[in-house]
Image (tube, rainbow, N blue to C red):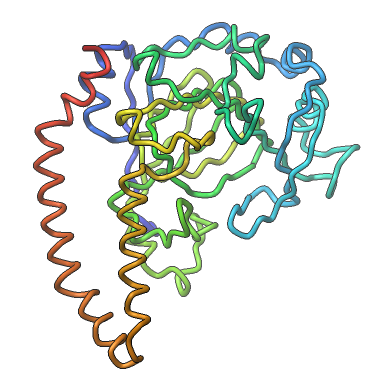
Length: 335
């Protein structure tokens, strides 16, 4: 018996701009796009080529003694290596040179030149490699936010999280398993910020996370040359089945002023959502002014009819808005 309901991610071939904008994007569901040209990177990006073109530029990497990385408990260390040395190590299973142990796992998530202000951009951080990777033109140039270079050891698993922008994950080298969960299943994922507390999604602790089984699991295995469309707010968990190299391209699905301009990582909630969450937090803190029995009583009231009916009205309004605006929102890229 399956732990969760499993749904294969839809696969599309011969996808062009019109098909993506008119058919795929409006569904707001993940999709594997097979056969879209990503340039000569598929043939060129061997370990030797990457090391040569990337050179000895220093990169900040994650190093973990175990392949299952946990961001919340920080079971990894940040280290710095020359890029060519990093590529050599990350492509190996056992290491003669290491930081923590001989079978440690490595992960690179490229950063901007000024990590506090600039988003990652492959063309700026790795210009010698960027010319090999062609970004699919599925969005307007002024919607572009970042292009993130990702390299990981075989077996490395990244924690479940969501992003607030639409993105395409281009798999260049190796195979990668991706498990996704709908935003509608957020309450079953035991969130801490933008990340799920359920680390082992294949063998979760159901005593600690009993409702996790209610979440529907969307799954795919990416092959070299595949693009995975991950709509904003969809949770995703990745496992490198082989030494893996890829590029994530993020773009602003919402108007630019919806996002925090001081967010080079692109993972802060939209400004309106942040204000709403802060208002709710203030409302809850207001109850602290009352005696304990009053706090308990009004806390129960807040958790039942008022919030429930408000949420129900909210869902109805959003559903109506989405049905009339969904296609228009995607078309707006090309108007």
